[in-house]
Length: 273
Image (tube, rainbow, N blue to C red; front, side, top):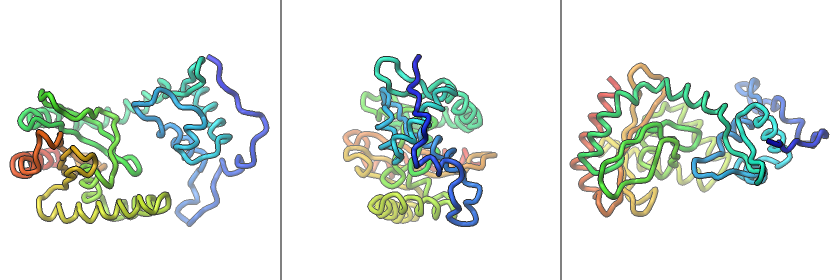
């Protein structure tokens, strides 16, 4: 396999790849190069057939010359692989070690799976557990019913914090400082996305007070209904969220709120204590 090697002459933006000048006292240990390398790895999605340096640069908001150095290094280390014919990059086998180590810690999935499957079969929906990754949620466990119509989400799929029930459930349950950090990060990146996130959180607070869960009826996708509950798993230190959803043509809001909601809340309680 041939790896596209970057020029030996570093571009001007290479100077900030060591340690970024502190934005405040808390950031004095922040290593920009490490953060950017992780951003490159995180920009890949399950549906991607491979990404060029230009596509990675656009997703990460980085100069292409910087991305070229990162992809070269990550390929040498096995975290990325490059297709000989297209020159596109994909995730390498070295990333499996990181992912499997994380999933191995999530023993809560084994406890949750039977309860999730039972609820999925009862409701004809898809029941999932997710954790937060920056401004989105990543599914770590998914159980589907045998119904003909179900959501095509899978482990590794991402959901937006603002518009999804599971994202809102996480925001409601997250510690105040973490929410503050999320809002600040979103505000720095995109003013419109920040406003959407604030609106989603405000709605989540109202839903939580009224129903004991969060909702998203046709907001994440026009024809999808869902509810979710945040929880802190037994012996864990990371907030998670569990949701239940399906096509609005077969899963009505009344059914979710009246029949499914008590069962979902009970599962969250059992996973927490």
